[in-house]
Image 1 (cartoon, rainbow, N blue to C red):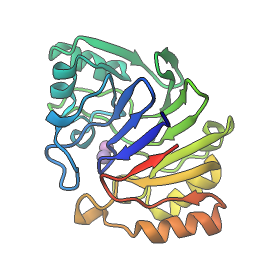
Image 2 (image 1 turned 90 degrees about the horizontal axis):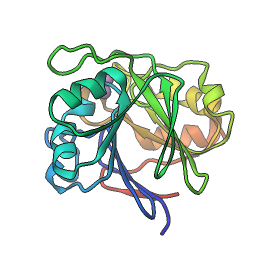
Image 3 (image 1 turned 120 degrees about the horizontal axis):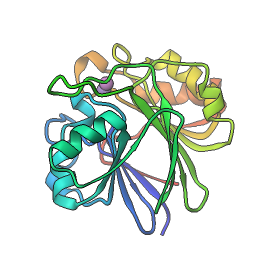
Length: 228
Ligand code: NI
Ligand code: MN
């Protein structure tokens, strides 16, 4: 089976390999653009980039119901375990762990990370995934542009997912620069269009990625799937 990546709106992604289903930043029930509800998701891993509600909202419910393993920073893992989550793989910036579906590196992000109840959510991050078949994916998650993205992309990337919404993350101009630094084969935008303050023209951005970053920019709708 080919590996697929389905956009569930905002920064919520469902990555499916032949043997595993990995959910990133579960925000479904309260998301205006999510194509499904938290109760409909069957996964064995959940990756959480930082503590903000629009990235962790449905994590506890999904983790408890499915028995999936959460992968996040140390503080967020501790918070989830206190709420009854059984399986957690905690990390911090620069660390890599090996899981049944591949390797996960927790990369830096320039953002903030307080949890919904005010608990310190550690440092925000992104994820560099190297799947069992060698496919490399980078999820920048909520971040500003930073020049070390060049190092994250240095090992070659099949796909990079970057925010373009502006206001709370980098906007379209900086996201084009991010793709130039990362130099992936394909780039997908996220964290836009969920609410009016982060509305963006993803098709225009994807066209700029093609012309300015010489990379295949893709603009998809929530619910759509990309085959890797
Ligand atoms: Ni955030
Ligand atoms: Mn966010």
